[in-house]
Length: 568
Image (cartoon, rainbow, N blue to C red):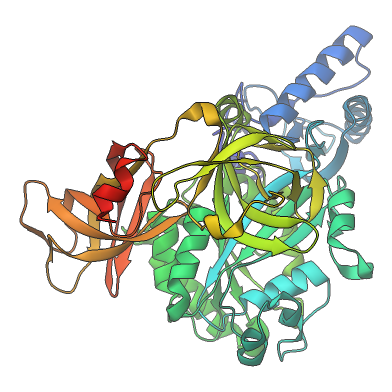
């Protein structure tokens, strides 16, 4: 993503330090998906072809989305255009978009003070085109927040297109288990989809659409990962954040309770795992304006603390929502805050504007590099589907996976990898031929024995010759521990989709650790070996004990050694 502070482009408008001083935004960046254009009036054929090539590059950089600023020079000078020139420029932009098969949507217009008697404007335009090798643009959003803050209700309202009745009707479609319907509380991880078409219009389950129809009609898909808010399901929530690789997180806070229960814990998890997040203050229909303001002030205070070091950005208009989406993508420190109601629908549209414009948070180069690597698929869920057989759900962390590919899955309890064939692939409940790095999907494995699979396994290309380990070292920071953390202590370790109990074998250069201290620690898995990579983020916990870090070394073992090492 480009790091030009786009916000300054519009905040500069109307706030020039002196009448004679021209207004400026940051100069245009070579890479990234943002293009400045002074004007596009009647270009020659040669110039038009050049502009189209440039648009293709910007769309590729934004993985299918680009933002054009019309009326702005390459050096960031806000010149603006008169109405006639602006109309002609937008007409040219429309022709360019047609040529590459994209759609354009005007995001906002602003007047500028430039030495001229005629009013001049700058216009910001979103260009969207689904890449040829994809069905849609995909963005994964993890939904966090305390129990009863309204997570499932908000997702119900967004994905079903109907407001809530104040008694939880909207969330009933999201629950997977009977006890969830009875208690109104989510205990499992569920996935909900919200689509936007190329013109930026919402595509959801209203009008009796099926999931397949939503996928077909959408050029951008937001997949919400609805995580559990209750403390006793914390391990499920951590698994959702570490394993499903969300692009960002939505932290829901109830306006009438403020920061309560697991809110701080969820906030800490997002910070520890470096997942960018934005905040939604819900249930504003239940509170006075003063209560909502108090909750927002409380959030702003927490976000500005040294531990968080975030820049809160309260969204109160469409204009703010556009700015928030662009700022959020450019700087991990910006944290947009929305205040809305799932019952009255107040400010719900601002959240939709934000989600529609929010660009992919990884750039095209990173994805290209991952796609060049060998295939590696993380197994997060395992099902048996009638007439299909064994199905696994998860994320492709590198490479490309096609129908018919021969892969190996493991490690098993004795450290082996087993051969299997990918029979078919589904993304967001619709068939897909090719899966690319970073995408989540379900893979059908035919008659492969489900009993041989477990969460935490990986499916990899046979050429990878994967290494497994029972013993590994990690550089950790102890976030909280009631007494001292020493050799022999057992913790639940989360590394990506791996979740297993491990024992502390050695703390290098120290006998024990206290809260806030750093050290390199050697862990040993208690049950079976796992596939780990050096550099992977690690999170461990046991009761109130919590710590984070990254894997620094793995003691690779051959398949035959696994049983002996674990004492089987």
